[in-house]
Image (cartoon, rainbow, N blue to C red):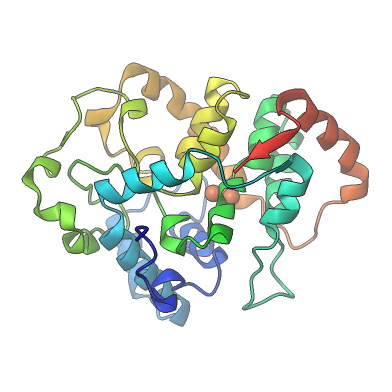
Amino acid sequence: MAATQKFNEQERNPLNSLDEWEDAVLERYPDPEAIASSKSTEEYRNYDNPERDTVREFYRLNHTYQTYDFVQEKRNEFLKFDKKEMPVWQAFDFLNQLVDDSDPDTDLDQFQHLLQTAEAIRADGHPDWMVLVGLMHDMGKVLCLFGEPQWAVVGDTFPVGCAYSDKVVYPEYFSNNPDFNRPEYQTPTGVYEEGCGLRNVHMSWGHDEYVYQMMKDHLPEPALYMLRYHSFYAWHREGAYGQLLDSHDRDMLKWVKLFNPYDLYSKNPVPPDWKELKPYYEDLVAKYLPRTLKF
Ligand SMILES: [Fe+2]
Ligand SMILES: [Fe+2]
């Protein structure tokens, strides 16, 4: 039985939509410079909001079930890229099948978020490969369309196989994780070497690693860091897990930090004029990506 088959509907999809997780991240980091202080974290947690309960349940499931072994299983399952193959532009239509049932009128679809992120990056004059990162960074959310539970697609990511940082949101739920009782996984470096570099560290499984693996032969190194670690808030916002980093990670951190505000703060209820933008993005995709993407 595949690792995620045993969960019922409520355990698979605790959120009304994936956007609830992103909204919660935005609330935690309301401005580009904000680091969650203990006070603001307290405020964040005590704020009376029914959506908060679904987000809390989402993190409980994420922290409980994302074990080291779970990550290996998911890597074996999805990094063969033997599920589907389609032209890039068809892949956006595929991703857009992820709709927000709770509020179809007010929420923009996935493609609009990607386009707005890309456009905000372009407006600031960053390199075209970074614009392409904006356009592709959440393509990994198609994992949901393969039947994966929400907590195995989105959520802040964290290293597995070593001690959990209390800088990961809702750290108390890690005590439910079977790895919590495996002493070899609970030292600061766990199964890794000190300073081994993030490339040697397994992160909790989700849309970041999946899209990184999809894009890794096509984009420059800073772009790949942006894709691979954009949900690793404990690192790029909180500065945790320094014991695992090497000098290359420390060097690349600035790129991950540069990307994050475009992801979080570019949402706008007015969709960009796609007709006008289409030729630019068709050229951009053709410049860097193969004709088809494998899933
Ligand atoms: Fe994302
Ligand atoms: Fe995003």
